[in-house]
Length: 261
Image 1 (cartoon, helix red, strand yellow):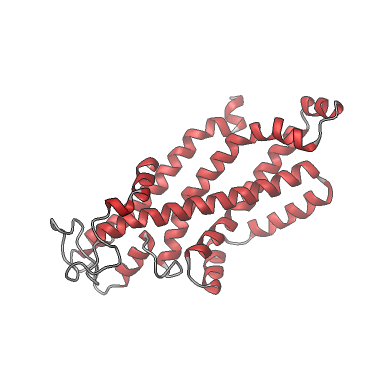
Image 2: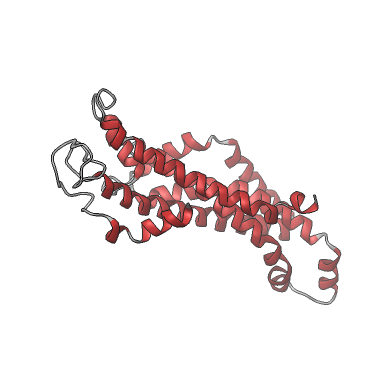
């Protein structure tokens, strides 16, 4: 499922039959041979918007997940390895972020910063790093207490060697699983921000399709919802479920309890 969505996102200029922003037909035209999912209220092809929306959603999901994992791993590893005041300060900052309600905070920051894809990536990425930092710190504390790490230190191994030789191989599956997990969440958050009108106003995304569709008066009175609302909602659900399945498949390698069992 994720591979299919990624392929559609990469090949959007080839697969899309029309320019998603161009008026190519009458307003609210039903599905036909020329427009497989009909058109929206402005006469723009909905299939093209759905295909280009995959690129927007995947880009935001992957970039936001990469940002969340990068910050979370850096903070968690520093707290777990350096200990002392670094650990105390980092964990108190993490506690503050975890105590704040994520979605209202995202909406507030996005509203104050203004709409845009870069802002959405930054906001969603910064919302995901605290939980990752806490998990990475816990894993680092477990690793540094192992006998082979103490032995390596006794033979003169420095922090760089310990990170490269012991920390990175052990944290690899955990980092990948955290990346996939937050990518699934980022798909929903990006769609939610776009649905609320806080996404890129010039971009094409699944959330923006829902926002425009549900703003149309009487969308559920006729049959327009079936080709305007439903496909975008199904695409968001498939992307989120696809990432969730990948994360579930990676859990046996990333979860120490699973491996012990």
